[in-house]
Amino acid sequence: MKIIVDAMGGDIAFAPQIEGSVRAAGELGVQIVLVGDEQTISRHLDRLGYKGNDIAIVHASDVITNDDEPAKAVRSKKDASIVVAANLLKNGEGDALVSAGATGGVLAAGLLIVGRINGVARPALAPIIPTDKGPALLLDAGANADCKPENLLQFGIMGSVYAANVLGKENPRVAVVNIGGEAHKGNTLVKEAYALLAAAPVNFCGNIEGREIPMGEADVIVCDGFVGNVILKLTEGLAQTLLGNIKAIFKKNIFTMLAAAMCKGGFTEFKKKMDYTEYGGALLLGAKHPVIKAHGSSNAKAVYSAIRQAKRFIEMDVVEKIETDIARMEGIGSVTES
Image (cartoon, rainbow, N blue to C red; front, side, top):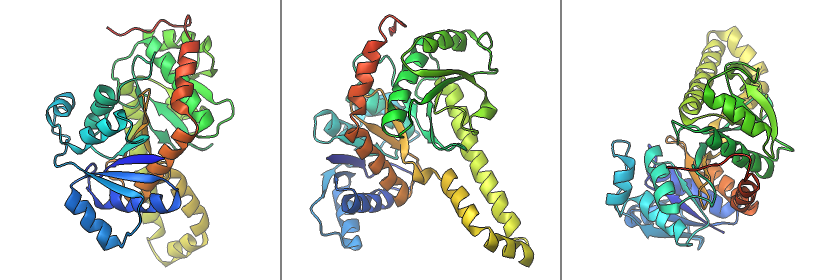
């Protein structure tokens, strides 16, 4: 199994990607292809003392940044690391792609180069988010700001396949984000999506309100990309704020520090539950081959987790299962793109 890693993507290029890849090559039994500046990657591997044969380097001299217009940059920057990596994946020179690069560039490369699964109208960005009952999948989290009801139907089906096969959720609960639990509430998009999902081959449990998401009331949370991105960023910000405030409280004085020592085990467990580096990255569900967008600020542990996530994705044949389930839904909702 060969995982392609964009070594130039991310807030900190090279080091976390290389270090996470070295760990993955040693612990996960996968081969890694690092895409980026060959000399820089080779020097860092030497500094790490890596002497194995499971990491290859493919040179790429350019990078797509957040300032670039994604689709235009993918077409014009032929030697950008994400473009080179996506072409390797498309041409069968790897089984999955991991990048912490600019979200727009990763999505554009995934859509324009890697392409879509047969029958999928729009791939969705699907991060794993922490809840009180374990990890849940949120989709779409930013790939499609405007959606049709049929797109949300496909998001639910793709998310259900992933949650069952990779997250290990038995008969995963699928819900659509709404302002109330009743079927008649919400805008036209969610009301029509509700009807389609209710007839789909998934365990649809109805609407989910924002406050129910962190409680773990659904395993697959379906919405358009605008709403999903707001939920994702709010979840990240709230987690950081909570952890920061708890840490500040424990450091107030000698008594709170003693209390912190007594609560260390529980606090460590809570911190782990809220830590994005444990979960890997956001999947581009619906792409022909596995594409995982790791967090821009990913450290080596997060890159390792994303590679582990990619390995599991491949082992469970998620792409093939999504294609099968999308084909089964014919007649439930006609999905077309203009």
